[in-house]
Amino acid sequence: MSVSTVLVLGDEPPPKLDRLAGRARVRYADEKSLAELLPAADALLVWDFTSDAVRRSWPGPGRRPGWVHTASAGVDRLLGCPELVGSQTVITNARGIFDRPIAEYTAGLVLAMAKDFPGSWKLQNERRWRHRETIRLAGTHAIVVGSGPIGREIGRTLLALGVEVELVGRRGRDGDPDFGRVHPSAALGGLLPSADWVVCAAPLTTETTGMFDAAAFSRMKPGARFVNVGRGAHVVQEDLVAALASGRLAGAALDVFAEEPLPPDSPLWDTPGLLVSPHMSGDTLGWRDALAEQFCDNFDRWAAGEPLFNVVDKQLGYVPDRSAR
Image 1 (tube, rainbow, N blue to C red):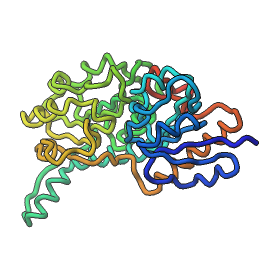
Image 2 (image 1 turned 90 degrees about the vertical axis):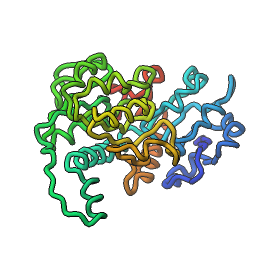
Image 3 (image 1 turned 180 degrees about the vertical axis):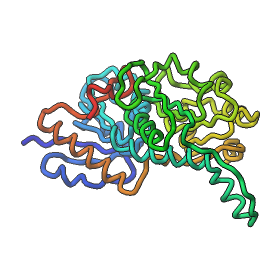
């Protein structure tokens, strides 16, 4: 049996990799050593999926890994490397791990805004008894942008709460088993004025970068609320701040940002009506174990010469449905 070299990029070793014993030599790299070690690797596990080191360190023509797996659903950092995109190297991602956790987190954000939990917490700290009326969630209308597994799970969770949900994807299609119809991205502008809730869970591509800007926010009806659990670059942050300050939007929640960690002097920290969380919507107890087990399962297939799960279409920027696990 041949022994493969698996290179892991990250500051901490993943759990569960003892499953590879006897079949793989596991080596570790940080951002400084990655360029030197990459040419000798058969496979690369990008455990630190916040790193841009692959973009800076990918080898030129010659020996390079045949497979790169990222422990994240988003692959935009990897696809920012033209040499990797143009190579024969297969990219896989962590599709399927974060769907339910992010859906639960998004539902929590929607409920928190509908029921004004931040206001209750503030009043409690001030020891003030002030009765208010809150929004009945059932019967409200949500637009979920992103028709992949995460967006679909968000939509199904909101449906279970009585919210009317319309799903927007790259391409439209009828006969969807959960939503009846998936709207094409070109239809988003016409859908926004009817939404009480707009949730972004799209992959980051050239087409989706900056899609929520002043024009998009101006199309939302007064009093609508916005949630982004996709990528920070989906939103023009200055335009969101302006929409909240003007009262056009009644509230918003961001779990992802153009710059992470969010700098202490960012105006987003103090923007009225904005909930800020540190890119944690998919991170639940045991998530590292699940990510490592998924990689090991895919390694079993790779070592056996079988098709891999979650193969990313490097031109589309995500895993097409036909190749999803």
